[in-house]
Image (tube, rainbow, N blue to C red; front, side):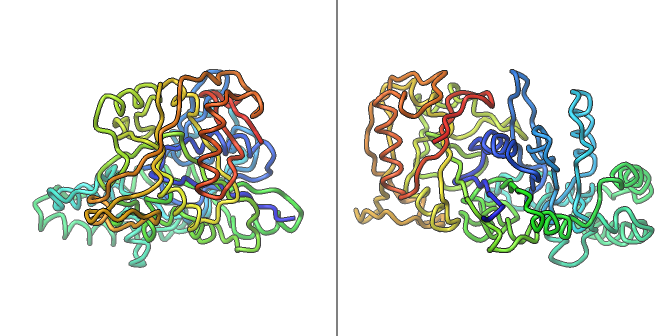
Length: 421
């Protein structure tokens, strides 16, 4: 039996992956975060208390070993703040591990992130300006600083070289210089605090798999933000699809068992970029308020719209979804009428069910909708058989179009508000 289950976002992120991860982690020994940085967030609600995790795997709440994998870029200050938040709430972080191969975000990455967004002008991407992209750029340019370097005697020399080079760029654009000594002092303290968590997670994971341990992999962001398969250039700086799970952890394809794609019963997006089913009207505003659609990380209001089955089928193909986890069915149930996008019509009137990531083509696409009856209440329901007929009809339409079963249905914000099929 394969021992690794994967949870991935199917659209633009913010689908509620944390809730599904939290449930699956109760049955896992290891919870792995594979990509991204603190530009993403998973919100977990436990007994009415809300926790927003940006770097630490959500499995920490279930007592699993929580691993920040090599594909993650880590802001040490943010990570230490998260550790403190959990510890103050009585949640142990003794089982937290950080890959020695994970790259570190520094102040010059954040400054460069802002500079790049500024230079884009009207073509801005909508980055969170947390230094994620520049950190990945340094990784690919082989000038990045890994965790194993961060906690070693080489750190000061590597940091000095990087700051000197970045300051030359900042000087060209009239930006303030980064103070090497101040950064060294601050980040050396972070390195000392994080050193006990840093280890060889590659062999740790495989040793445990050979012992029959169960692993859950947490995706960050989502499919349509993938650097290769998303709506480029309006994407994040890492692979947020199934390939990123493998590259960000050292797992191989043979390890993978279930692959769950997480969606909401509607859709949302933060930042710039094409969004075919976006509703720029009162219905969109209503969905935003009913679903509390404000960014976990940025607090920005999310763009909201109907569920896009064309995009969902694409995500299922790219990732190999074996099941779908749907949140916020309770939210759309409060609307009198619900729509599903079942096709795109181009400027020539041609309708397709195939998704394209080309933003120039997407902006000219019009959604083709099927309409469903709303006005149903599913709060407190624990079994699929007990769902109102309208809700079942909606779920079945999604399954038929995509060809993947809906295995989890969220019925409310708490970790217990979940139908498992």
